[in-house]
Length: 384
Ligand code: UDP
Image (cartoon, rainbow, N blue to C red; front, side, top):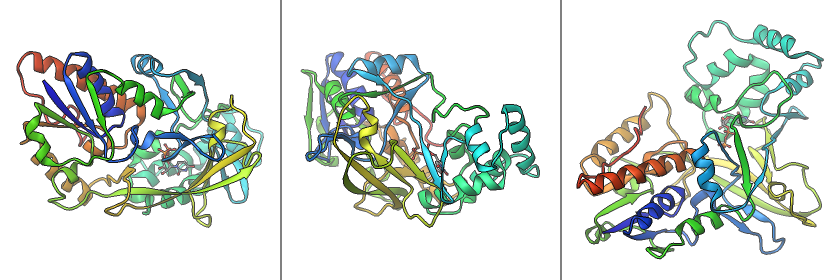
């Protein structure tokens, strides 16, 4: 049977490969001139540094199967994401840990003392945090919130942190020891040849044809048994209920000699600096040697019609969720399309979860096909 996959990011690539291995004919179309979506990496022509074109991507997961899966396609080097942040004229360690707390309050607390101290700062009037700000005030208190989260979050999301779900802050751990690993996951690493190389490998199969610079058109549907669509769900329906809102990013690239900031990612916690962070790409590949260095200053703003969507804006109780619900209801009436991935389901998805969902979607779809049952519009709940 013949299947169409719209978009060549991890979601489609992983499912397409499974379908190809099961003997199906697979066409993958991609509107950009490269595969791997926003995980795209490429060698900078001037410096030969491997650059994360759409911002930093560090692979981390707790899922053994996903880790084994990704490791098939490239040589992963051990890599620990250690992020720093500049706030109020000083450099601090992230995520908030014992070093951050001691430096911030000019103390020499041990873990227990720090825990008690932060508890004394926390806002105890908040029982069940309803939004990002309440979650931060309850966990950390006002000083740490204002230094590291309030300004950054306003720049990143373009709104008051009271409008954002508490779940966004829950992405970051808070530690009362000196562990400054940004992630809590068991597995973490960086592919030596980059994510685009990985996606190219996944798509390299005799039953897969990839067409770059090719936008989706609904007239294509008739030629296929089924379509897996990883583009924005509102675009699929010609924005019938209005566009879903995203944040997009602008990267201002600079090339320098030597080492610009001494680490891969430096965040900027205050609003007087207009960018959210600076990424210095060569630090993602510390096993390589480069005389020059490439940095990206990262600016976040509202995503307009022709911009690249990055972060779906899902304000709890907001208009966006109603709009999304309308698209979901419409999607459920399509019998030939499955919506997948970050844009197809309008969720904040890390690479490992994207791959997990794609593996599950592929296995379940192939079983349904074998049993002559229809493939559903969604395998995950876009609204939870
Ligand atoms: N955040 C913050 N200050 C920081 C880093 C993160 O306020 O220095 C907040 C911000 O709202 C951000 C969220 O925490 O959107 C999640 O951060 P993460 O580093 O996971 O964001 P990503 O790397 O996905 O952009």
